[in-house]
Image (cartoon, rainbow, N blue to C red; front, side, top):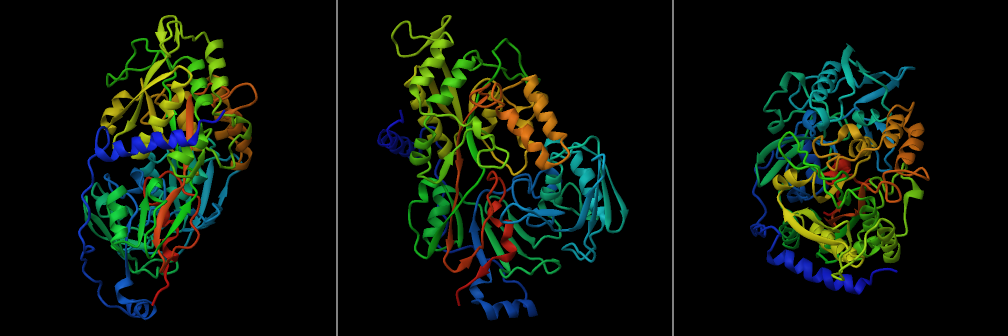
Length: 558
């Protein structure tokens, strides 16, 4: 039986009001000034003059508020561009609006019969934004450097990259990996001659734009790269304002920005002169469960590992069955999203049989009863061997959407006798608590490697991946077979079996290591005068995924 949406809606009005008024929610961001930032106009060129003939001088520049800045800088060897186009750098391959692989810097590539050696031929005559030539040596340097960064770039399978000549690079792997092609898509090429510890704040690349000015915490100004080998961008200058949520929406309402990313709760509103882009994504949100009991073990940093309640399979499965994902989409996301039953919902490698009939309170109660959980004292909370079914759901205090999801999910599972205490914490606090508490995490990638990172036992406690210490040797085997498959297509069957093979899997009917909740739609208001083409299905929101095709954006008003 579905949870009544009007009840959920009323509940969410309260919780979102709470988020706006204080409590665990962050302080309001200061509204922007009435006038857009004043930036120095670029020097006149023949190209700029031609551009001026096509559009008003004031619109040679557009202003965007599409997310936060990269605090660590814009260095691809340290992870920049992993969840979206790197903008300042070029990649060997890219995905088009249909997620099909197409050449970028690469002219061609091949894979050896033993699947250990990728040989890539690159374009000739490509220049970096400082005018220096880009050669195979830069490609080899980039991959070798990225391999030193561990999980930040997922290039650890690389043995060595070697430039065979000026325009041919060989990428030799330690072992075959079906997902390695994604490294050719996401890793932006950096210049060996200019790459140093300060590169992230002064990036030089061969992408469509170059960085001009970065006022940290305020704005980033970029201009079209005159050395770019592709089609020249029509928009000569971009200003990225580091505003989010209500502040970004206010800037759009004031006419100060031409592109703005807004939370789904604000997408239902209207902005004069702007149209809404509802972009499908694989950007998901879910409840990560500590999989092991608390036996006193701690991480090297001293953080507690395990939770005695969520270590019980019946608790994890009951949460999955009790949650009404469609109601979460309707109530929290205002319809801008879709239910998620795994980390790859909506992608080609999702296992359809892993989808369950959720919002089933009776099924959840049955699972709990069969698992030995019962309410013996009539307080509404089930117990087992003297242990109450009670845990804490932690969400990032700066994220009102995750707050609403946590509160709503906690309310839903209370109906089956599970008590969830919901708390907002800083990311620094979450890092200390994420091995022993339920966390509202978000992931979502075009790259299947993320599934391996989240569920393979070798990734237990590694960075932010398998924080719940999930482990199942049979699932490991499926994941390893997927990674070592001859091709991305041949790997799909193993990725699907890891999710659910009819008897076991990491999804709800199996180990239920997570309770995945929703996939977000990314919602943007865009000026009616700006044509941004067809956005691709976007990954998780780090970076600026909306800019994947920015070189083809056009200003249409005169």
